[in-house]
Image (cartoon, rainbow, N blue to C red):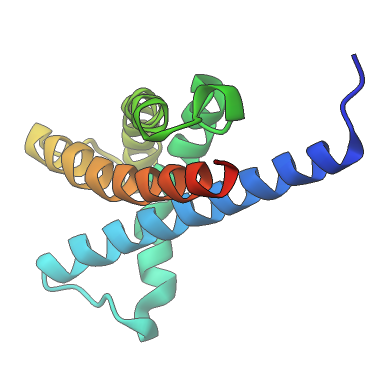
Length: 140
């Protein structure tokens, strides 16, 4: 069955907004983490913040894609969006931890990953939940 070009464009735009928002959310998370450890985190430190966030952004983008966290059918409504985010972030954290360990030459203590999982999940889930609510109101 053919999909109408307008639907394809809308789906692509939706995915682009989600990806951009997810990257922004993980950059915010990295900035908060850097600041809490007394490291530069303001606008002048954007490259350092991006470097800190990069392994988790990469891990998230891979895992979220595999988990269907960008698929409209799996993310319609806040409940579905939050479930897809939880599943995607679980894989994203694992991949991000591996990528980060490769970058810095070691794994961090488990407490680092627990805090990373919880805080980033709140930030990702919060933004994505709002997105799903707004999207639902526009559709309904």
